[in-house]
Length: 246
Figure 1 (spheres, rainbow, N blue to C red):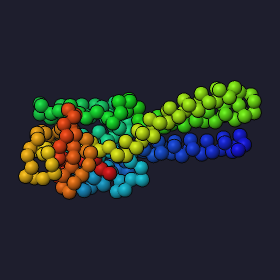
Figure 2: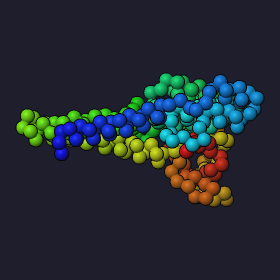
Figure 3: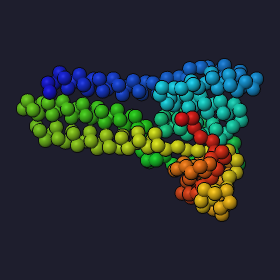
Figure 4: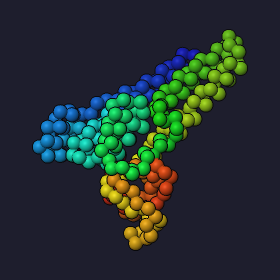
């Protein structure tokens, strides 16, 4: 493959990934002021339409944040936390999200378990998309070095080392992107009994108060298998949890 063709493919790949990043940062197709006005008049459908597009092409952190604002305007702290936690996975360093989450958690009663940690520790400070961009950049550098090594102007060992570094960056990026799609954090709307099996008559393992964050692991009928911030697992009725929009 010629160097020009390699450069063209790399440019297309970079453009596609940048388009995804740009789309995820687009503002919602509405106005927070319109939503606030509609919410003050209890016109929740109008407020929801102002904040959240009916079928967003890309799951946007801004749309999720707007959805959380709508829930908070309605006094639904659990729904707000669920949406903002989903947005936080896309924008882990966003000061507004961190502030909003801290503020709404402060309104919860004492005794609420600590929030669940991100699927990977590094996702506290970096999003999988950012790591993916770094991996793509590293692969472009490795491809250029490999092309130069083929022409004899660069040591082949340098190209191999660059490829290994790029692979090392790409692995957590792919893992993080998969976890981003497969991980759902729910928030307890009201005190809920967590049971050992998905049966309303099963023995109660423990209870969780309103505002407790849980990671949803699987489903069975009307029940969800959940894990809280203390690592405790059990089954809870799905209707008792606030979940982020899909």
